[in-house]
Image (cartoon, rainbow, N blue to C red):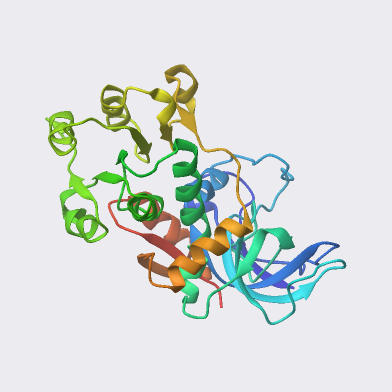
Length: 304
């Protein structure tokens, strides 16, 4: 048997329980990973609240967890490139909040030795979402990009990747996070009255693109700041995106992209801040801490 965090009915963090499940087995083309750490993200909150991702068995118990890092301990038939004992990080749909997770071998990549387990467990989703979002928006040299929620896990990586591409970044966050954002190379701006005027003062030639991790009034203001709505992508306002004519995240993820991003981290060209860690048995507290908001960086569950 193997330990996992699961739930038997949708709800808030209080529905999560430490349970025992049969050890998952790696089939053809799959690997089994003994999980060391798993990141907490909005995807997991939605799953706990009842959302069922496409292609997922809707039965119970359901185990959340979309990103993870750990050690390969079983390799299925036909898998090449990975062996038991390899340290990896990767992504799936569910089951990351567990001692063991099984995923296709095409959804993991090698963990750099210099990357800690707590960083690795919370790295795949934030890094890949930032990379894919900027790719969708075509952000590059000469652009001015507005990033909402810039101190969060996705936003902070997006700031760094946009700066690497040669873009100017105007980054929104609470004032307590402004020094952090300046250190990442962004021009920070606070929310509240006069927001659009403050952005225009920082970007007198206009804003070319925007990544929205906040929604609500911040997104409303963005519609006035960015002329081309095809260059606005929201991570949160999925229900409004179609009517507004703006983008949402495509389902694109690639282990090659993840490997590239992990290499940037290993070379010291990308930083990730871990806000807090919780043991597996306190996964409910990890979700509560995430939902409380107001913090920079990532919350990570340490499994082993």
